[in-house]
Length: 385
Ligand code: HEM
Image (cartoon, rainbow, N blue to C red; front, side, top):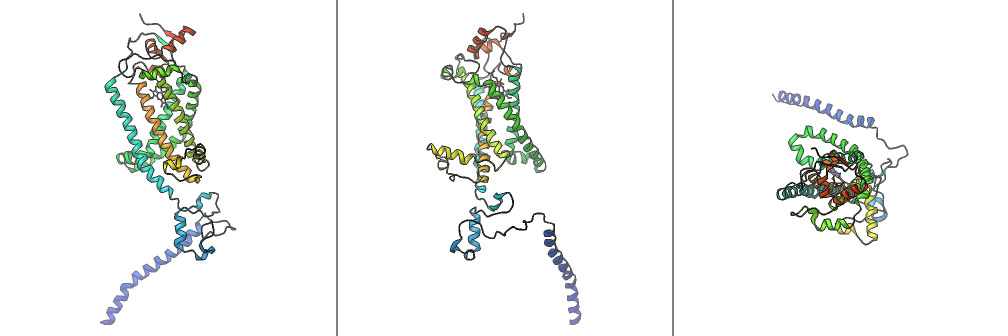
């Protein structure tokens, strides 16, 4: 009986034993096979890098440093030597990366979202109070040429590429929290991949549009005395006062122009550094430059002092690119408002390139005088009888 039970027991363990042995064998073979297939191998003459490079370790002898100390140094960003071209791979842990992630998903995500919402609410309140700014004397039916085809093409190249960049760029910051729950992970992944590629390529169209707009309009955007008067009267936008005299662009438009140029330049430079990473040291050099004139930006913002590693530069670039893009989006929301529903007759300037003479007289009286003084063929159509 006892014998029978023992045989039974040994039979019971036989099958699992065989399975275990097979699994153990497969398990042993897998790493060997993986090693054999690995294409990433150190070169023949590579030296094995056991401890992080840097100043002599405690006690002057590597052997006295404990594992805990080595890992402590690595955790604090100690960089070792690597034999591959990407030297930054020698840094196993970059702690600032975690700070950047928290900052990007925290304050950047929240405050930038609030800023855009606040702009939309302010514009809606302004519209509710002021209503559409009408042409006080009514449309004359006489048209005056405001922008050439080339000027309008440049404007629309810059505008449409910026809107594309804005939508695809906002998806980087807000897509995960706002879009993904609506369309689901399966659709969000490929959509975001497509938007990322779109963002990268559209950037070049925007830069071209920005340069063209700068060349065409810089001469009309130099601040002068008429701007002070225009600003003092609130541009005639507030209250029922009539519009102060202005040249081709009034002070409000000059603010838009310079805002677009400066933010656009900053976006282009930081975007370029993100497109071609680890090659630029914009923040180290800018902070050092400002430090020379007594402005210690890192101290003011509670950041580490420069010089920064290549990866830190990328993190600063990414945060800066996001902040500036939202600042420009807020500015452009106001611009689009005034160019469409906010002001009667304004859109025509960028639509057909011709505006109503009464609109032009009310908003840009000095410019109309200039055009009239030069030639009368600025007037392109007589009123219909
Ligand atoms: C749907 C979008 C847009 C509309 C309807 C629009 C409309 C207009 C109009 C009507 C003007 C001429 C104003 C005048 O006659 O004096 C103008 C000018 C201008 N636009 Fe736009 N725009 C749009 C988007 C953009 C974007 C995205 C940018 C920049 C990225 C931009 C930058 C400018 C600049 C710099 C000027 C000249 C300065 C000024 O008039 O404020 N626009 N736009």
